[in-house]
Length: 289
Length: 243
Image 1: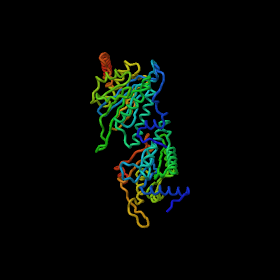
Image 2 (image 1 turned 90 degrees about the horizontal axis):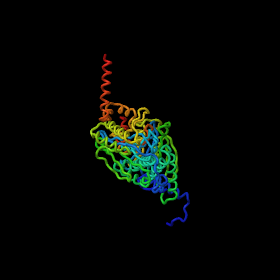
Image 3 (image 1 turned 45 degrees about the vertical axis):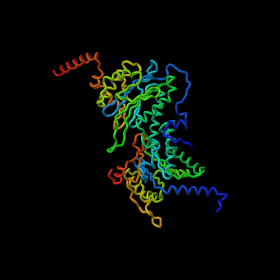
Image 4 (image 1 turned 45 degrees about the horizontal axis):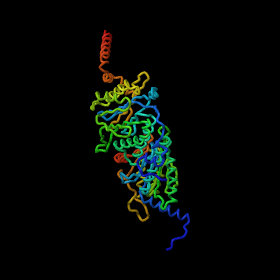
C-alpha cells in the first residue's frame, strides 16, 4: 500500500487512479456541436444569505434535449454550485468537486473555507482547459457562506458569489448578483434594475426568476416557466441554517403571486394589466349586485 | 550474551504480538456499541483535537486505540479508499466489510514484513443505508490483521478485559442513546486509568466526566452522512439523564 499524504482527493486519484479523472491532454478533433450547452443561471444575495436559480432547458443546436434538466446542485451544507456548458463535463466536474470537498472535511476534521473551495474549483476548471479549447466547456457559478464558531454558537459571514472564466480565473462578486450562461447578459441587465441588497429571500427569489424569464424571452437556449407542463426553475437557498432546495410548491406559489407579476411586467404590458384590473373590478361589482 | 543465530517463527510472532499488545494496553479504552438509533462510540480521550473516532464514509465509522500516528495513517487510508470506491462506482457500493478487509490485509502484511508491527487495534462500524432495514455491523481488526465481526459491542485498548467484562454483564440491545452512553461510561470507569493500582492489580472504579470523553454516533435516521460528534455540553446532559 502506498498512499499519498495529501488532503486533496483529486491529487490522490491522480497518483493512485488516473483513469478516474479527466485526461490531462486529449487529441479529439474539434467538432462543431459538442453535447449540450447554453443556459442561464443566476446568483443573488439577500438579507438572509444567498440563492442560486437556474432554468431547466438543455439544448443541442436547435433541438431541446431536455426541458427538465437540473443545473444547480448542493455541494455541502453551506455551498451550492451551478454549471453552464457541456453537461457531460459539468457532471464530471461536479462529482469530482463534491468528492474533493467532502474528502477534505473527513481527512482534516473541519470543512474548507469558502475561499478554499473556490480556489479548488478554479484549479479543476484550469485542469479542464485543454478540453475546453476543443469546445467541451464547463463554467461554474458557486455560492456559499463561511461559518465559524462564535461564543454563542456559529456566526455566519454574508453570502458569497464567485464566478469563473474558462481558464479558471475567479471573480468574486461585489454587486450582489451574477448570471452565467448564454442568457446571462439579459438576466444581468434585468437584475441591474431590480436588485436590492435589503430584499427578503422571497423577493430575491421572485427577482431571480424574473431575470430568468427575461433571459428566456431573448435566448433560445434558456427555458422559461412552463405552467402547462409544470416545469419551473430550480432554486437553491443558503442561509444560516444551511443549503436547501426550494420545494416546487413554494416556487409555484411565488410565481403565481401578484408580486411576481408586478416585477415581471414591462412598460408595454402595463396597459394590458391596467385593462385586466378594470375587468376584474367590473366583475366584482357585478357580484355585489 | 550472544544473539541467537536462529529464532523460530513462533518466537518471532510471539515477541511481536507481545510488543503490540503492550503498546495497546498502555493507552486508554474505547467502547463501541450498537443501540436503538444506531452505533455509539465512546472513547476515553482528554484531547479535543487528536481524535480516536472518525467518519470514514456515509454509513461507516472508525475507532482506534494505540499509537496515534499509526492509526491516524490508517484512518486516512480508509477514507481515501472509501472515497475512491464511492467515486468510481456509487456511494451505496461502499461497504464496511471491504474497508475492514483492507485494514486486515494491510495490518497482516505489516505485522510480518515490517521491522516493527503496528501498535494499534481498529474498529470499523457500519449501519444500513436509509432505504434498508435498520442493522448495524461492527468489525474489530487487531495489530496482526485478525478480523472479527460483532453485532453487539467492541472494547479496545487500555484495561480492556475489565471494561469488556462489565459490558458482557450489563449490555442490552436497543438501548436509547442516553442509556447506551451512561452504560459505556460506567464500563470505561471500570478501568483504572492512571489511578494507582493495588498490589493485586485491582483497578479502582472511576466516574469519567464529559471532558474526558470523545463521543460520536452513527444514526440510522440521518439522510446520508450518519456520523456526527456529540459535543461536550450535550454529553454532560446525557450523562445526567437530562437530554
